[in-house]
Image: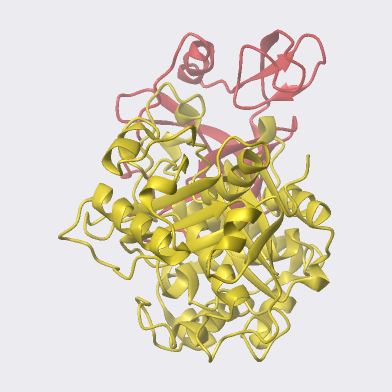
Length: 389
Length: 130
């Protein structure tokens, strides 16, 4: 069974907050749910499928289903970190194709900023029952140094430079200046990135995404319902998902699970990387973007540094406009999970609703890619290909 | 800069891994090899992750090369986390110690040393070889 054409994204919403000291996590979930349903022209009563991941408080989807007042016949709490929400779009399309639900709601929300979380540098606190914990915890793995080891190896193996990585942040900042909700709207240069403090060699502070509160939601529905609504038609063309891990000690940090999820999504969609007009690429760190761009086939493995340099990711300038909302590097990273907002900006581009300064002309085919967990150890990857009809 | 002053979180052993940590107290690094497919893996498991065969302990030479590393500058004190590829094949997470942090390089030959964690349990780490 293919999901190509089986489902449409009818509603999206991104919470404008970046610091939610006066809101609860559950409240943020409700506000984004309402926003996405309003955007679609649907109501709470239309929702019969609900999707959430580890950011949702409570036991899987149960607490949120109650809080949101949902009457459901399909739930899915697949948890693959920040990539969960691309997986949810795919699973929602599958469920719709199989007749298990007709209006699927996906929500994400969190408030790490308000909680004062040092997301990238706090020690992992996995309980001893987690089988890998005792072989890693003594050595001080944190999010930043795990991604840094991917960057260090890529530099060693392929000659990638800090200047090339910095171009990814530079491109994101060029886009963020037009997003009134972005946490960091200032345009930065390669020199600014290299002059920012080293967090974990070779990653500088400006190679790292922002820490923000907020959230987002997506409504996926049947072709019949989507066509009855007044919103532009955004069709799910294909999707892929794949976890990657340390493989029993056969470690290769130069690629992500996207090397598997990407080809699956392209095959299902029946398109190639050259057909993609806009790409949302999960930007937890600059190196994350570079690895995913290679894994998706936008350039050869090892050539990502040269590909992203000199503004090639800047809308209206380069060959592959990416993260035109400013992405996680500049705009937001709600709940420390950037996968859902990647889908949102891809939908805006396809609808023609991106900021005019960054809107890609004739944007009829877009890709959203997410990773989640730690690229240095174990992570999920999700690729979604969307088309404007 | 020495990382001697860094507090090393203690590993919590279980019935599956107790021999690994017991051996570390004797200054020995153990690996597990599959009895069925004869392949080594890491971290050690009761069943081989490549074929689900039964596994048995064997001692590693303790020699390896740095596959990748990063200096965590934000930490107090900064420390070098790394993946080290053992000469037997598996690549394992560890720290590089007993070397100025700015001298750590990918490809460097290293040898296992054991450093006490906060409860005294020795933990395998790697220092420049020879």
